[in-house]
Image (cartoon, rainbow, N blue to C red; front, top):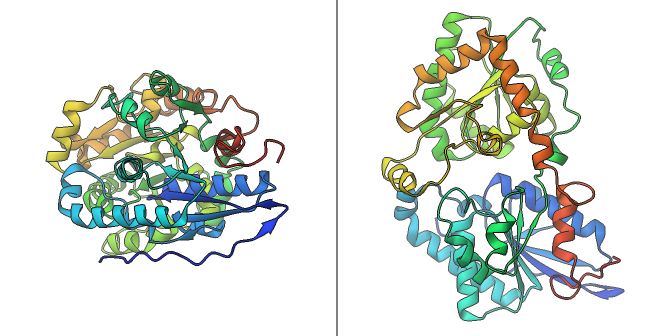
Length: 410
């Protein structure tokens, strides 16, 4: 389906100061979370009325973003998967660029989704369409692969906001402003209560809970659902009393329910955002499709393994370029294989089940992971006062009139 981009009619207001306009682009759930937090903090810290337009998900829209196209239209994972959708993506890129030109924002903030967002930034730069300050939130993994991108990004953006402490030097080497603003987990993963979740779902303290995290994209779900299902079946053959919990996203719940409708064992599917961290913490062990959720599990101390496979062509291309030893970000941060990784050919139900059974049966294995995970907090905490979301907002507005025009004492 080709979405026709139409510029929203936005009411302009003047409240003591001239209003400002920010164009944001996010294309996946993790970006929606970051974008919503950034909007919220900018609104709370500024006396200047700010209009937010662009592309985002339900969380950003709830904070006031007027989204011009459904967020999930932007995100396609994998080299091979991108190729056959390229014409549609190019039409979307052109449409977004035209929207930015027409909106004349004071700043364009692109959030993660590098392949799409960098092409938007490149076209804006090439055509000199906008005088907006260009800011990218979530530095691409130049430390993992394609380090030459840092120089290219420096030519496109005024600033990059980094989630990891070792990222800024890669960009500063090319005379680009780059700030470590901390990881959103520092703020988000607080006050969770796994015992409360277990009690409300009839799970006793003696029960073992296995968390299945099936991914946040439809392609990931299709590739991994059967692998995780069969792994869970193997585990239940060994211990029929193991409880299965499947945390997911509200907008993804229907697809998850369809994917598991033929499963012959009971599961607890959780999609309410308010229950997210409690459902995570209720798990004794878990398996996650590699991604943000793996770091989330590690941060709150849930022993787990990760599994992931993609199209063989994509995997071959990535393998030639990759510069790091591990796929899991916790393993990278800890510089050790703390979490078992079952990737590509190793991503099968037997391997995953063996890894999970080892964690379930060996308290010492679970304890070793938890001990290592305890070190993550200090490595993800921002150096700025407060937490990562205000840090990101302050990093954008610290230079008045050069970024958003927000006074420093706002």
